[in-house]
Each structure stands twice: as structure tokens, then as C-alpha cells.
Amino acid sequence: MRLLEEKILSDGRAINEDILRVDTFINHQVDPLLMSRCAREFAVHFKGKGITKIVTIESSGIAPALLTSLEMNVPMVILKKQPSKVLNDDLYQTMVASFTKGTNYELTLSKEVISENDHVLIIDDFLANGEAVTGAVRLLRMAHATVAGIGILIEKAFQPGREKLEDAGFEVYSLARIGSMSKDQISFI
Ligand code: G4P
Image 1 (cartoon, rainbow, N blue to C red):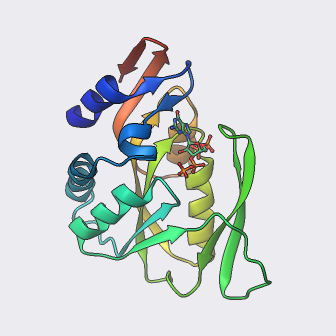
Image 2 (image 1 turned 180 degrees about the vertical axis):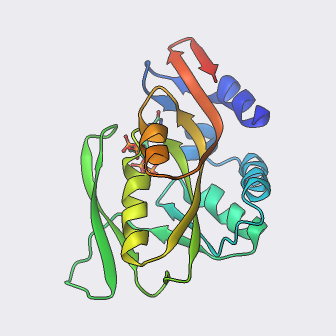
């Protein structure tokens, strides 16, 4: 998507060959107009696929996911990262390892908000190694829901996330696909 690519070039900052800072329009401050244009793009792409819910992972996926849910007129569900403090039969939980941040977290979904009748579009800000989305898919499978596709704002195509998800049979639709980056150059596929 041209608009997002232009914003990445003007306001994004590659701090090295692996990490792109987008704090001024996605991760810290949010550009609402850009997010709503991205949401419209997801809604057009996934139109007619019988989507009943948008699922995202806190926290940076929430803005594009909420606007996509508004466009598609379906609810949004946020997968939480904090573990449940008590053993709770009403939750599905799975451990996710983040390579980029070097941390592990317990991804949590309440049984109350997803059912076997749901056909879900997963939306997230970055696709790197695909671990967060794979964790989301595990939770949705526990709920016997189905996955209609995966919408990503920025894919780092030099990392293995897309391949992992496509090998598992999922459609990945990314609005900006970065082929390579260095401190003073970002190139798109
Ligand atoms: P993966 O899910 O694709 O495997 O990615 P990974 O675990 O490696 O990334 C973990 C976190 O790092 C995610 O944020 C992801 O959005 C973020 N991330 C990955 N690559 C980049 C990058 O190049 N730039 C930026 N700004 N973030 C990146 P998170 O822990 O879920 O945090 P949040 O921002 O959603 O709260």
C-alpha cells in the first residue's frame, strides 16, 4: 500500500538491519487517518469471506484492528499478554516466545468471546518471525474457531514469519513488505 510505504520512508527509522522504529505513527503515537486507510484496505481485501470477528494481539495491533472491525461491522477481540493470576477454566492460554524482544509471554483468550462458529481475521502491526500470530492461531484452534486470513501492516519479508504461516495454510496479506533495510535505506518488495 503506497500510503503506508511512503509514511515508513518519511517517518520510519531503521535502527539497524533488523528493527524498524515506527513510534511516531504506529507503536507509540498513532496516526488515525493512516490507520483508517489501512483498515479500509484490509476490509476490501477480506470482504465476502464470512468474517465474524477481528482478533489482535495487544498492544500495537489494537488501533488497526479496531478500525478494521468498524469497517467490517464485526467485533474486535484483543488477545492479552498477561497470564491469569488464578487457574481459570474460562480461559485458553498459550506461551509465545518473542525473538525480537527476547521475552516469553502467556497469550490469553477468554472462552466467552470466541466460539466454534467464529471465522476470524487476525490483524497485527508487525510480522517478523510469526510467533505472535502462530500463538493466536493456537488459541483460536483451542476454541475450535477458524481463521479466514492474516492482515499485517508491516511485514519484514527477510524474516521467516510469512513462510511459516503460509506453510500452515494461511493467507497473509501485508500492506508493506520490507525486503531489506539498513540505517539509511529501506526497500520494499
Ligand atoms: P513475531 O511475532 O513475528 O515472531 O515477532 P517477534 O516475536 O519477533 O516480535 C515481538 C514484538 O516485537 C512484537 O511487538 C512485534 O510487533 C515487535 N517487532 C518485531 N519487529 C519489529 C520491528 O522491526 N519494529 C518494531 N517497532 N517492532 C517490531 P509486541 O511485543 O507484541 O509489542 P506491542 O508493540 O504490540 O505491544
